[in-house]
Image (cartoon, rainbow, N blue to C red; front, side):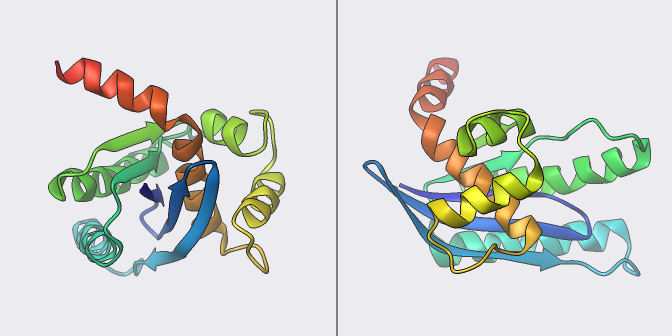
Length: 166
């Protein structure tokens, strides 16, 4: 199964594509979508949406995994992050893909083994699991971690999603 992981942000949205075959994880691609702070929020969201549609079209994932909003100290930052998440969720649903959401705690637990791992530990485990020569760009690494989380927990989550549709 090919999985697109997304770490949403209005300035930088990270993405990571992995292949889950049996008990193996294969790195396909990763990168970041950059928007310009001089643009309106609506144009930035359109850029995120359009680029994610392009990535979905190019790599044909079977599922999308998106990181959930963390509790932010700044309400405006949280609101903007929520908008970016909305663009990511919409890109997946518009492409008729199942979309799954994971908290930072779930991602850290799935990648490192405990939810209190720091960012550097997560990035290093992503590098090791994906057999990357170096740590990926921060947002791309976070997106790969979300995809890995889905690969490790997808059976349970897909059964729950299937039961909810019935």
